[in-house]
Image 1 (cartoon, one colour):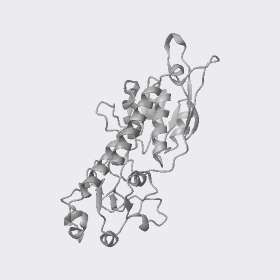
Image 2 (tube, one colour):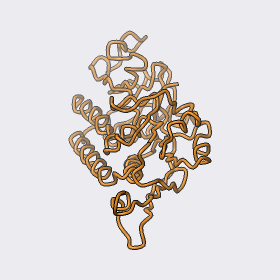
Image 3 (tube, helix red, strand yellow):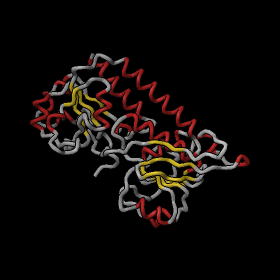
Image 4 (cartoon, one colour):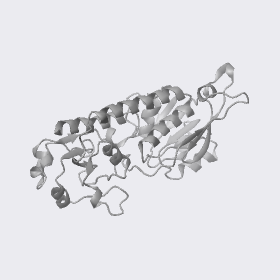
Length: 307
């Protein structure tokens, strides 16, 4: 199974602040020192989680959240990240697994905050039993949820202002990219997750990103109660003949523009003949964090080329 590929359902994310009797905003309450540190409460998918002000020993078991923590300036507070957290390079990568989390191994790092995107092996309850705050921030179903999760991490780590600046910049960059590619409506596309022809439909987070451009997803008609991630047949894809092909399996499966014509029948596809095959970074195309605008730009650039 490939990592961080299934964008599951997400609960609505909200933020609640624990303030002193005299009041105060999120940034002030997150500060420590002489002003008196206040814990914060973050409303995550596992409920209201109380987090100490500016936690100093954070563990991230999700590559997307690792990227976010460093992007908002909380990198120095991170003591360990999961084995698949390969970006940024300075992240303290360990053998901790986000897919088969081991509570004892996590506890050994003495964390004061653990961030996960999935509650596997009952890790959330196991850590809560020993009073370790855990934020469950699952894969989002829409863009607003992705931005809310970044804001959650900002609040939890004492970097609320930085998180807001990050999401504001992301939104603006994505809007500019989409506006420059407004004539994409009517073009069809195929997004490939692996060389077994697994794809995404428009109901998934990835599919909704493509939907910003008005692109039509050839996988939508093939989805039959597969949760938005159907495995397409070669015959079906050849019949659909998409205008654009996006390969999100260049790293995992070694796929690129040169390998597609070698597949039976694929050399006749319009996207292959017209060189409208887009080689994507697997990680960027599967994560919903700070590098999301890069994913959007890759789509926008491809659309511009077709036009």
